Amino acid sequence: MRLEVGIIKLVEEVIGISAERRAQFDWLRNKPRREDFGKHYDAVMTLYTALKGNWEGTTAKADGYLTPDAYFPEPYHFIFEFDELQHFTQFRERTFQHYPADIEIAYAPQKYRQFCQQYHTAALAKGPARFRRKTADFPYTNGRAAQRAFFDTFRDWLPPLHGLNPTLRLAEFEVTPILNGQLTNTAAKDYMQRLLHQRLRKLLTLKK
Image (tube, rainbow, N blue to C red):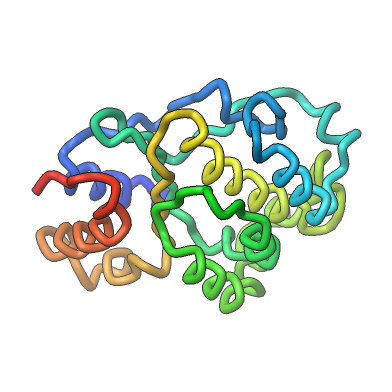
């Protein structure tokens, strides 16, 4: 079972509502579009250039949706992302240099930058060769990692622009006691509840 499945299930137990696992949004697509990013389009294209994106490859690839790990509907109305090791690369760290000041996010970006600095070598080494392959839009070694970082930015910037609450993220390293079995059942649920309250206390009232 993928790690994210168990974590999503635990989040569901904590907040008392089922998540949608294959949610799609018309504005969450695999290409940067002005109509989606609005006032932040220039900023996302500056990031795209910094990551050495290839516009010919981007426009040539098939249009598609970016599916979040989970979407929690009303009254919570936020996208949830569980970030495993492979997300914490130097490419992801670079994205934070381009975040507009008025983008609301429900996690600590400085902590994420620290994770990127600490784990970037292991993140690029994780998994099969396809994790490091070139892509049409980022046609160089580790292009897939750059693409992943770019799309993580979409999942952060776009939801608040389209009426959702800020995206909630949890990093693999934040839930190690749950993943390694140190905390189970009620103890795991209590631990998760504390993490969620830290992120959402200014945005939502979690069910107890």
